[in-house]
Amino acid sequence: MWKLYQAAKQFKLSNGVKFIFTKNPMNGRQFHFNVKMAYKCSHCQNKWTSMEGFLEAFAFPTRKSSVMIVHVTIYGQKCHTCKNKFEKGSVLDADYILDKMYQRLINKTKKSVPTVAKKQGHPKANHQKQLCQACALGKH
Image 1 (spheres, rainbow, N blue to C red):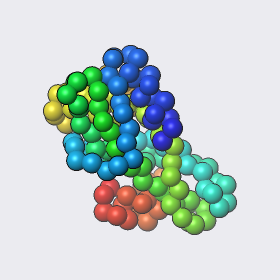
Image 2: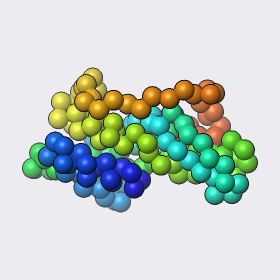
Image 3: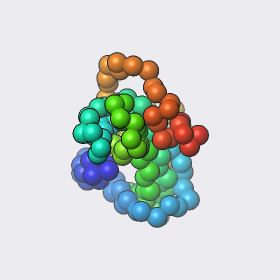
Image 4: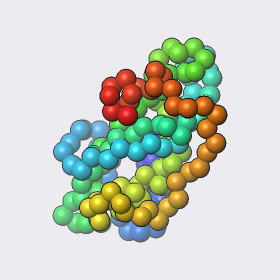
């Protein structure tokens, strides 16, 4: 989550939009993103990345269109090795998410063209639904 906050600060500098993150769930425009994330198992210390990390955000612009209020939920994945518990990931695609969210809010369409490129990867395996918290909750 920290990288998302860091990216929001940079995003503000580049286009003048300020993101305010809140821990309180709220009403607003809902966004779902499959993003590149890095994980580390707290049980066996295994590390992995996934192109299928899942993030849910609720956002709305304030009366000042240059300020966006955002509530973010990052869903976890279970370790491929020990399958102990869902681990929260670290977002590696933060710039892309913020830009896409901003573009969708401003343009009010899903077909907005982001100005930041999505991170590319080379998946070694297909998405394993049994290890995905968002899939277990029926969100992904």
